[in-house]
Amino acid sequence: MIPIEYYLSLSAFMFIVGVVGVLTRRNAIIVFMSIELMLNSANLTLVAFSSYLGNPIGQIFVFFVMTVAAAEAAIGLAIIISLFRNKKTVNIDEINILKW
Amino acid sequence: MNLYDFIFYFFAALTIVSAFFVVTTKNIIYAAFNLLLTFFGVAGIYVLLGADFLAIVQLIIYVGGILILMLFGVMLTNKITNVQIKTEASFVIPASIGVGLFAGVLIAILLKTEWRNSPADIPISTLVPIGKLLMEEWAFVFILLGVLLLIALIGAASIARKE
Image (cartoon, rainbow over all chains, first blue to last red; front, side):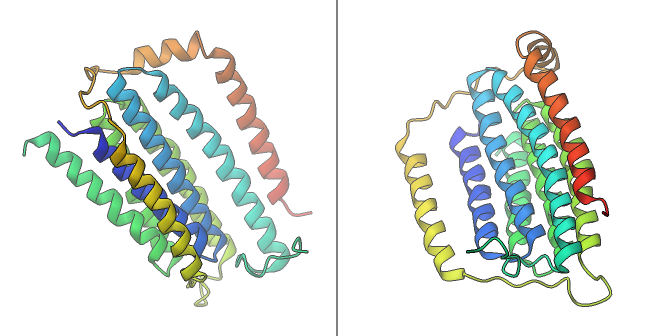
């Protein structure tokens, strides 16, 4: 049997890769993809615990997280498209009108 | 190494390699397709963990929905004919310091904790318990999420439309 540490390490790796993407990439859509990676790694942790504890509540929670992720994807892409229409760029270094 | 282990290592390697390429590749289209492979690998691991319903939902929502939305986003925000698709990285040194600290904390927790290592009996299908929980105990949250999705769709349409 696979010990639970393996699943948790995989999920931790995915989360760290997502953090690297958010911190280093300058394209808004890549940042968005990295956020999806982090959401997926949290989901993987929840499913692993749910399976190893024999409790389906964790899977219900993952289902809810996926629903909110879908809503977030729709809103986020709408904002990115609207930004592109107004500023002609999706580089997050150039989108700084809220910066003091 | 039995078949179960082999399947785990296969999907874990698929997930790790494609997740790595998502954040390192310069081309957004490649990143999107590597993200597809990542979602697919995670869905395979869900099947291995006995969460068959979630694996299918992962494929339908992430691969079928969110990823297509992202490809539309790439298409609408980049001039495909130019070389605009290439993007570069920045802030590598401060980011690597922060990420290194964070990874150290995660690994320390992972090694220090005594995890319970005997898996519970993996059920044949999780559809029936999940359906019962969603319709009885969590029915209110379920309906609320439906309303949230409706609001999000209306909001997305109204944000993205032309004035």
